Length: 133
Image (cartoon, rainbow, N blue to C red; front, side, top):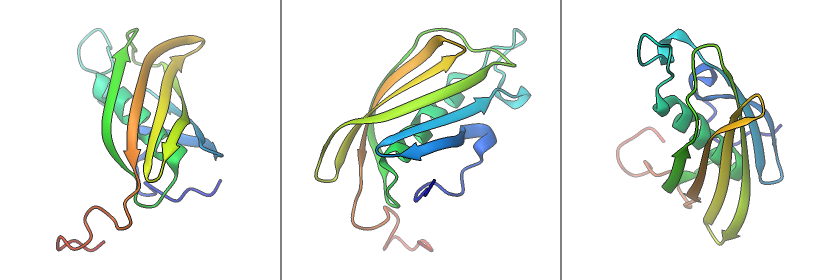
């Protein structure tokens, strides 16, 4: 795997890359205590979105890739102890714009689906803004 983006991600919180190639990405993420939203063990949806976003970024796999837009559906609850598998695939690209579909599953059940519109600008989004990029 030649990962060119999001190299400093905490893979415990946003998914561990298992495969990144040819406009696709496969990640896994074990749910953790710090992701739990309530006493029932429900995992907060923000962690699912973070995993899906990370998968979309890796499917594009460009050093400057950024998210511009997304639509998503939370289909089933995820609970502490679940192992999430994220699959992302570029379905359309034109110039610097990419449309990526992402699904998350627990075992064979799809728990989240989304479309992500990603862009690959010439420079890092923080270049010239006083950052160290």
